[in-house]
Image (cartoon, rainbow, N blue to C red; front, side, top):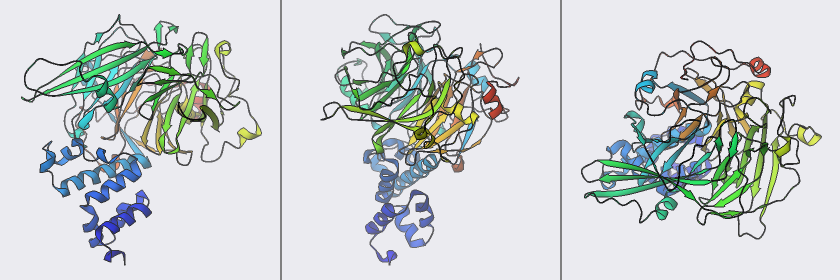
Amino acid sequence: MLLDLPEQECWQAISVYLPAKDILSFLCVHRNINNCLSSSVSFWRQALVRDQGVDDDYYMRERILASDTGGGERSTATAATVADGMRQAYLLHSYMSNLSSVKWLPVSQEMQQRQFPIKARKGHNSCVLNGPDGFKSLVITGGFSDDEGVTLLRLQKGIKSHTSDWGWTRLTPRYSSEPIFVYGASLTSLPAALSTAMERDRFMKDRPGLLKKTVAKAIRFGGFKGGRYTNPTNELWVLTIVDYDYEDGTWDQFAAWDKIETNGFSPRARAFHSATLIHERWLVVIGGMANQGSCLEESILDTKTWKWVDMSLGCECVPSGRHGHSVIWDKRRDRLVMFGGGSGTDLLRSGCDNNEIWELRMTMPGSHEQMWEWLKLRKNTLSSGCNNDDSGDDDSNNDSDSSSEEDEELIDAAMNLSSAESLCLGRCHNAMKLSPDTVLLMFGGGRPSTNGMLGYDLSKDAIIRPRVNGPLPMPRFTGVASLLETEGYILVHGGFNKEAQGGSTILDMNVLDLAPALRRNFAAFPLDEGRESQDAVSDDAAGNGQYGSSSRAFLYL
């Protein structure tokens, strides 16, 4: 009998053999099972490791313990408190993985007008910076703007940090050389351990009472330095954010940009590309808009040596040149998955979107065979009757709009997309990996843009359609969206909507709750509970390239 097994064998058997959705149901089967497992730290740790694919250290960080201990010392936390924090984390990430429903939370317009330190912009950057001991901050910077500042959101520790106010800070960074205006660049956060190792002896403070110095870094690559999609660059910059915590409970922040001189070959200058960090070291740059159109060129940077590594393709079938696509690292299957994008010499007046999905399997530098191999998972089903002016700089031999018997086999019921849904794979959409097997795609497409979203199951290579609640935001592309993984929220800011009041840059901020079934009270920002929903983009509107924008549009020129 299972009930007669020792506690450890009991939870091990359940963790190994039950799927995630059945674990919580199983706890309700019998009181003894519930008592045995609910307060078991080892059970929830193993369940989280198995289903969320993160290391053991994740659970013992202060951000989980702080959820119930008020940020007290780890030694004061009981086993029941730790187990409850892990159980809450497991519930949250289970909802994020299943992606059955989400909810939009509209941030107060008044707060954004009077208090938010960053104005309307497009083509800007955002990422989440992770440091040791659960330190985390969200950074927004750059874009089509004359603002050289760095805006930071320093998150409170604990999975219940959404119940307290999230304060914004605007920093004026120092530069190692003359700062440059850039938009359409990528900004990719570096692992906490690597960031700390790089800056052991820099940015020290003379002020007495310093408890801790925390360093977080992100890499910026490429972008346009001139208006009208001109002067692309291949420059590499590193943004460093340093936090100082003092004995009296105060803290200070510092920001710096350093231009990095790299080794090896020089990758093509480009913008609106993808830059994905894999194995906590290698930055893989794919595609982008170059001088005369879209390119594909794959490049990889060793972030420990700042050397660009030349890799070879292992197949003849490769994607066409593209920009505004997204690339996700599927760690469990050791591959990169690329979604959609578009062609053309600009974002609106030329080229067309595509709704393809590709995978790139690759070997790492130093292995016996250094070959990359592309495989198409879903063919493009969008019309090719668009103004495509980028043939002069398209460095691939594959026509993404062509059809073949092989392509026909790549479309089945699990991968069918309507015209409106395809916009979520259009140029300059946003993509985030919510869990080891789940990706969320949102916004995107230039003619028109969408406010819709789709999920993607990496384990099955299938589309997920979450139920969307709350008032829909304005359709857009070239905005930013950042996943707060521990908290279970996505923050969205800015972008551009061609159809809104003659075409405008958007200011509004929205928060997406990835686990509305938990009925959490979001108090980090004031919300406009009564805000009216924007219209969803219909299939007819998507097919005709039109969107009937409403007079309720919340825009700042």
